Amino acid sequence: MEHRYSAAYGEVAIRPLEKKDIENLRIWRNDTSQTRFLRNIGHITRDMQEKWYEGYLRDMDSMVFAIEETQRLKRMVGSLALYNFENGEAEIGRLQIGDLEARGHGIGGKSFVLAMAVGFKKLGLKRIYASVNRENLAAYKSYTKIGFRVCGSHASPVDGIEDEIEIDEKRWSDKNPYSNEIILFS
Image 1 (cartoon, rainbow, N blue to C red):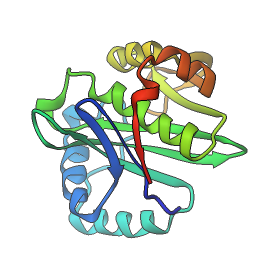
Image 2: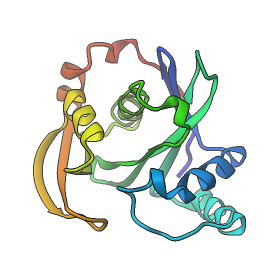
Image 3: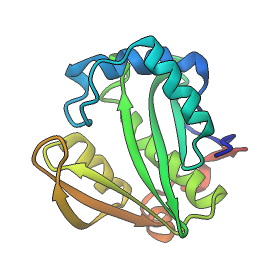
């Protein structure tokens, strides 16, 4: 999928993932202390990461964003994706704030709102959905605050139960008072 979208609000920006970013992703993904709620894919080598990136560039069903903290750290601190596009809907997830200095500052939640802005305002999506492990309290709290609502549940591929959550454009706009202040680029 052609991916040229970026968005910014306050100290958080998202932009298309670039080749220069993939080594950070590999390091963060290999750190098992950071991936408790992510599907276990084993140790990732540099060669594996390169091949993944080459495949991603040809993937017509995924948009991976690099997340940047633009004021204090002034660097890429994580990533997230929109994927599984179908019938005006897409899944959002694969969020990782890998830079430990960036954690605990609301960057993950803000990056979700920015990616949803791209989805709703630029891609014309009507609904965005995700799954969140009930034990992932920080993510759960953030997604509820953003406006997601629970619409189902299933066994987690990692451990425990995941709630299926969803949001539409109206609810997203109503729950995020700064949604009109987001700067979108394409």
